[in-house]
Image (cartoon, rainbow, N blue to C red):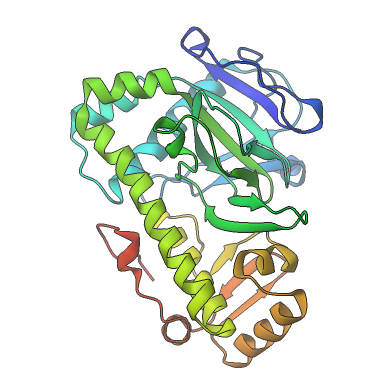
Length: 319
């Protein structure tokens, strides 16, 4: 069940109340438990670590219980603004005036448990989501009850930015593991577009890059051998994470089950296991217990036929 952690500038957020998973609802202005716990409580908290890249490391942890703290709310506000600016600058030029406009955006922060839905197919969202911590996945739900994962999104991504331009969502977005999401009211984003068109172009470009990732996924799942397919997905996720500063050296937390990995790649669970074993045997990569370990990047990229140009990043990822 999602929990509202804090709201900044409540008066600017006018979200409709809509049902979510397990009878929960979206309601604005219900501040709860934000605190920075001591290290001894780390096992009970969701870490927001290394979110801004090499020049701005945060070590914030958000408890699941506690009292609202204004100072920590301000920290989250600055964190959300910096994450958004850093992400947009990965692919777009932002002037100082654009950055100033970002700092005027209001938001609501919510924490999600694994498999909680952030946005559901058929929703008419009133706010855009920004990932502050964790990984989320975009999927279609099939009539059989199976899922087809379409893409995955990490810290800094806006997985439902399309909702700014379409009336109704045609897919669902869920938390793959524990996730923290900031919601920015559409009305605020539209005001920012009008005040600073280059900022609007940058967020629009975010949706175009999503489309490029979708195109690559179609090619990957329909035209590549299974071991190449899996290697390519691992390359994409690791490359994007390194560019965003959220992957530590050669490791990346990917809170996926083998079933979910198969649902992303169009593979049965037996095929997932065989393919993982084949990739491990190459000495290029390992994936165990939700942790992706890159052992030889060049070899993995060759196996996966990975060319990062479709990600349209201004700078190459520091691999």
